[in-house]
Length: 408
Image 1 (tube, one colour):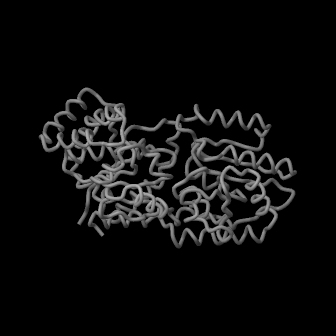
Image 2 (cartoon, rainbow, N blue to C red):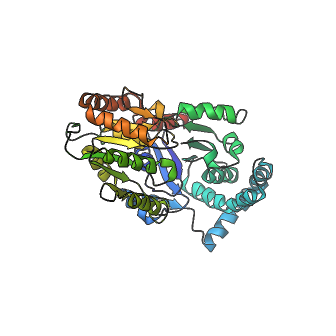
Image 3 (cartoon, rainbow, N blue to C red):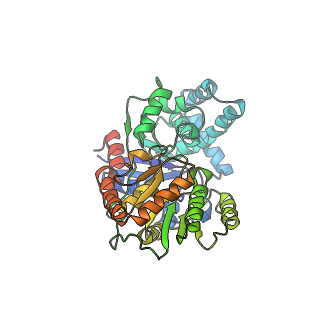
């Protein structure tokens, strides 16, 4: 029996959204038609994937909101009857951890929820799955009150707190939920005790191993040649790129010709933290050694991974980072910080190296160790892909979602 659902992603398609595109493709194979809906389009500069144009054409956007949208949304609110809109008002009034400003924000979400409810009804969705626990989940919850259509969420991390207030109600009213790491699962069991739905399961994100693989065998660094390091992550202070750049500076001061490429863009499409990092690089005279690639396609990312000797990421917090999974799937050494759920992906000394965050000297030392120990580099590279094969196939989360929807 096929299921037709709404697949709700904030500001889709963004630079970190390739996992959602893959999951949706697997859902289709499992007889789940996941129709795309999003809050708004992302800045053009970060919609960089080869499939981004196609994805935008297939997506219904809730914002901007036209005059006709207001009429249609308010009509949907009225059609829901007292049982619907009183539930919305009751949820807004009973939210215990919100300020007056946040409560007014929830009120402003009711028309948006009305628009989502109208889309859901007109398309015949039986369910709405939300890839967020922030305001998008509030909209889905309110839309569920107005339409009677159940919703679920995926918690990606790095922590529950980054998704804002009103978490108890978002989880309490959901049909079921997925969490990407064991660490986050334990966290919500503690923080949301008494508010979790009956069905909550750990569903790790993953990568498509058929697509993400090397074309040529991994080659460790040879002394006297440039060392290529690749990093991938949006340009945000939480990714710790500045600490990695400091590590590069230290290695170059030791006479090692390190070249670093960082793939990713800031949320403003290049006008925000990107500018700060550029200045940070110039201040250290590293413009010829460190390149900010901006938001690039998955093809360019795989090229960078294939050409690099090491993948490094100095994040201050993570869920379970797909960028690291992709690097491991490309069978290369990874050196990353032990934050969030990263230790569920990387076993230190076996299939990668784990370091404490905000320690550029330790990162520089680890990079030097891997560079100068070719046997270690080759061993880490070989075992990294095997870990992904065993535990992080991209089909897993889609299969769990389909199962909870009663399809498989």
